[in-house]
Length: 154
Image 1 (cartoon, rainbow, N blue to C red):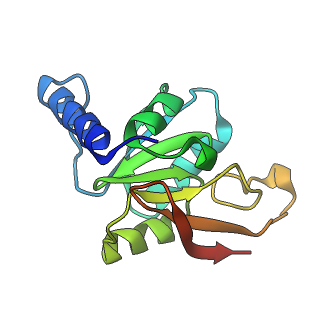
Image 2 (tube, rainbow, N blue to C red):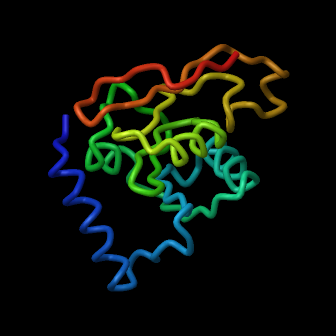
């Protein structure tokens, strides 16, 4: 488990990279920075989902596992992509509506997670799944790594 100090150090390093031009600075405060595998189709579909809901996205086609660790998201809550928006960590196939609610309510938390890759979640809802929708939960992850249910989807 990573500490809050480690998370702040990572975010500070990211800001420094922005200043050097290695990492582009967000265009707006709702820019979502996403770390993912370059060949993952469901990640691309999730990115398209959040873009349709008005978010701007900056994609890094590497380093998902490393980003998750640096940001303090517990490995047990991991998925195929890790993102950051307005200082919150977003892990996996979190619906854009839940991200919008998080940004509106601004809880004192690390962020949101949808562990694994539930069928029917945004990005895992392609025609190949035949309209199947498995129930899943979006978890509100605290800075100490504990989690509670933020929303239920069926």
